[in-house]
View 1 (cartoon, rainbow, N blue to C red):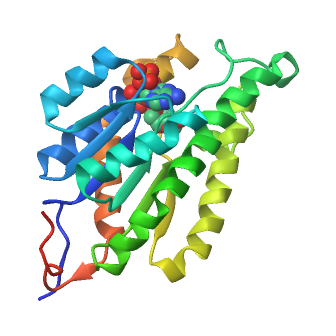
View 2: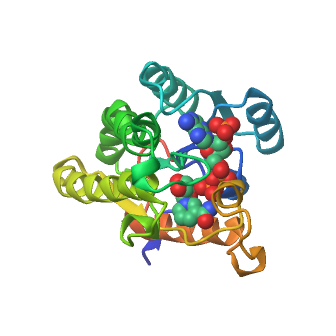
Length: 240
Ligand SMILES: NC(=O)c1ccc[n+]([C@@H]2O[C@H](COP(=O)([O-])OP(=O)(O)OC[C@H]3O[C@@H](n4cnc5c(N)ncnc54)[C@H](OP(=O)(O)O)[C@@H]3O)[C@@H](O)[C@H]2O)c1
């Protein structure tokens, strides 16, 4: 009987792994036996999550071009390759949120630098390792965390929404282009979650109406499982 790959030994990189959705992903993936490397900017939080989960923590800024290759080197060295990349780290742009007419160009640039260019650069830097994983029959998947702000024209969410719309479209095009390499790319909207990012954007929101990031992480993990190849046996050398 064919069974889907499970998470034992799966090599996963997560950006923004110390809070909200990213932290829930790191906890659940390591709990299922995946080998995880994660990125965030605040060293104390990276150390805390690494100690708690056993994942490999990387202190770096996805929005900084010069940080991308060192991140990719640490991911592939520590995990001995990579099967799944989750581009989750995100910038709101202006805080408090602002109308586009009141948004500084630098604030739009900051949202694009993290949400679009950062995800693009890290995917490019890991593309060869992902293609190698696909060739080995392990599967290769990039999950780009999007938002309903990518499709709905919410006033005040211009910088963030434009960056997420661009990320979603980039994902769809790259998914077509990467088919010959055996790499899949998916943009997923986790829904409105009770996280620090949401509190920063909408401090007066009714938190009881928001999804727990743990639930959103479990939903994403189910989608990862469905997107990875079905196999009857482990590839040579196993998945460890
Ligand atoms: N919360 C929602 O309602 C909601 C709704 C739809 C979509 N989303 C999306 O879901 C994803 C996760 O959001 P969240 O609410 O879980 O956010 P969050 O709680 O604010 O966590 C963000 C994480 O990313 C890290 N991070 C932020 N900027 C970074 C950078 N430039 N480089 C590296 N790491 C960075 C943060 O740590 P440091 O600050 O230490 O770097 C933290 O670990 C984002 O893509 C967001 O757009 C969220």
